[in-house]
Length: 235
Image (tube, rainbow, N blue to C red):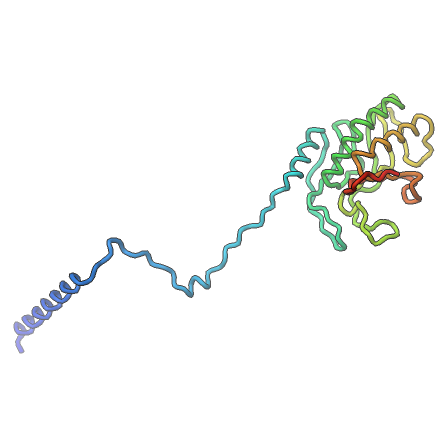
């Protein structure tokens, strides 16, 4: 077979192929747009799930409470959330160092916002009024013996309100003239009336008010807490 004959045969084959393609193109309806490649089913099954982050938004009531604290001039910082064995829990704790710009809280107390707000309202208003009325002075520092503590009520298995940041124990009040009035101490006369006024006024902002005379456990301090109750328990 000559080279010329081979080339002629190849050309004939090419012409036949082009004719076949042309006839197929006329028979098949082509899409206007090229299809978008889709992932294979097995690839979709293996694709990692995308998890939406859990919402950590602060509850509206907590946000509003903190706004009130700032308006009252309370000095506080947010503290790490507490969740301890036995059920002690404080999801939005605050470390409070002052109940007003001129009234310290010592030592710094870890509390929930409701307790801090109740303490600020009590001492800024009725507490300040009692100091002026009976002692003709101002409150400089509120001294506490216990704020958040993960523990049960003394002699019981039930958790104390301290375990939820709901309670504050007041052991003494220091005045701007240098005097220190101890709760359950030797206070007499005007100082005793001053403490009595605070104890009476606390029943309202706080739902539980205990102190000297209630029982031996509260002989040397006031226990104030914001436990949810139908009616305040003040003894």
